[in-house]
Length: 320
Ligand SMILES: [Zn+2]
Image (cartoon, rainbow, N blue to C red):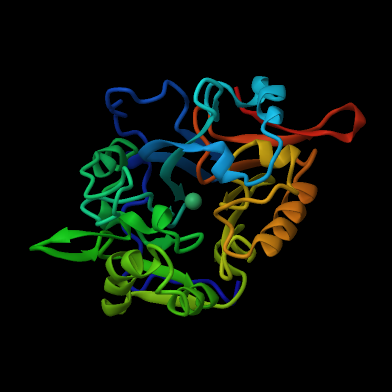
């Protein structure tokens, strides 16, 4: 408890009124629960955008017939057999504890220069979706990026008077020092310098960052877990409230097939071997355990658990 992060501007409006707010459903939104309760903590999904990605590119060298073999697990939310694309949501999760509102990750963001990507100069309804989940930016006490890839930091900032400024003006942003250092050392790599400049640097300039080096408890049972591999400073958020457990695991897995095949190489891992090691550890440590998993890009019912079947094969079972 001694290492709790305390918002310097205090706690604003984490009350039940916000939870009871009417939920608007934007056109095309999924008809699934978008808020889950774990003891005294709730987790809400706030969608930024959805996009396809070539499975052959995402998993170089993998035997993609496995995607068809596990169609029951993957279709329709995570794989499109006709195009052989995996499907990703880009989203934030809002975690509400009795004291704090915490935003985990920030999707792609609006108005960001992203080259030929679908996210380029986008104008999506994320802030409306956030409001529909019962939260306005001023209420947020903490922002945690699982890592600094552009599809996780977008809503760290938004435009005001032609400049990128922090979207959550009263929040402390919790950055892992290794992620800051690793990104700075790689600014020349494709895309990283641009997203660092528009989504990280303005937050650093605003002096609202808590730099951490490992695990850190934010509130009772709500703990940041250092989990490097996908990137040097990747961090997950673990929740254990009144014995009910969940984990927001960022990009330790991107698609449920990685539960079956944690040994597959993943294009997006900054260090391919370290990514595999951490993924094996995550899958092994969460198989047949009563922990609900929220991966950063999972679609549809979104949340689920890793279960083993006869023969020891592991599957990702979405919550119905
Ligand atoms: Zn990602």
